[in-house]
Length: 418
Image (tube, rainbow, N blue to C red; front, side, top):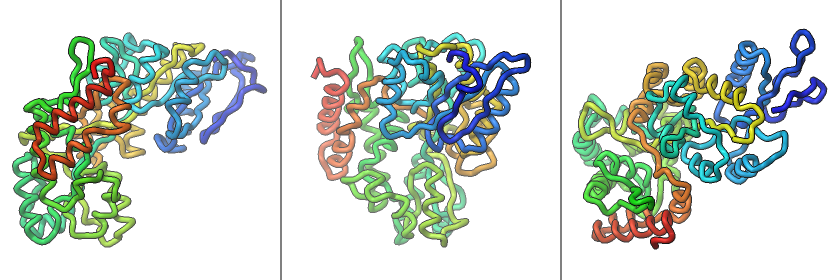
């Protein structure tokens, strides 16, 4: 951003940062940063700001808190703007990065990623959506992924001493739990994020890119194996086959008792205990099991990347902020403060003391994101995967339904081929 006099500097959002002049009368450059609501606590932002401004005496931070509702349109407008008050750094959802890359208005951060930021250790589920070909536009910041939340007392009552580490053992334990009168697992029929992990574990994909066009891939043998495992697991409970995990909210179902497991982010445990205080101290967490004990299952990884608009007035200052936020010191601080997964597999030890976050970090190390194309938003808008899952769980032919869903995905991702 352009230099501003002290009288003209101001701060908006939930973080108030100071304004002033450097000794000798030289004014500081202000770097405007857009962060999303609840991504970081005010205490974290205060501590980060104080440290950054101390170590970068020529810069000031203006951190502005944004709402998720309507953020895509707001970011796109900022990226196109020629006004002098546009942001220099923006936090965006990891799967949103392709939307902004398509507009061609993000700065290329490949060199910094390779030279200074240790990109080889980044979580795949955060790094891949931030990349277009060999160019890195989004820098991973933090992640969250699904784990299994379970009732320790119900596991003990069924004679299960240790959480399962393989999918085969998970099925066997869940069947044992289900036969005791409780639901072995509550798994809604349209929880397609969980299905995606099983598909990826089998070597399948939701969609693949061939000859510069995207094609749905749910009808491959590998993807069908993932759906078959989902069907077998979902049958060991009473989850509705025609609804997703939010209809009804699975936290409420679990809090109602007589449910041994759900697949969810660890933070949902707080909601469960608020609704049923009697479950305090009875909940545990383990990574979604994989096909072999040596590796947890693949899971969908959500979270945020940091991007720098091409229209920033000072890309050097903007990348300094990105480097600090995404660097080991403050990234691990954020993870501990907010119960996130750090952006690198090598930093997982920073959250080892929290059972739920540690389980999440183990899964996120093998996490994936949705297909790296801006058109994927159109798939989710009227998601054919959900209908496919419901029809299979009701007994329809999986291959025929997978072909139908794959065609729908292809039509949304590559309309000219539809």
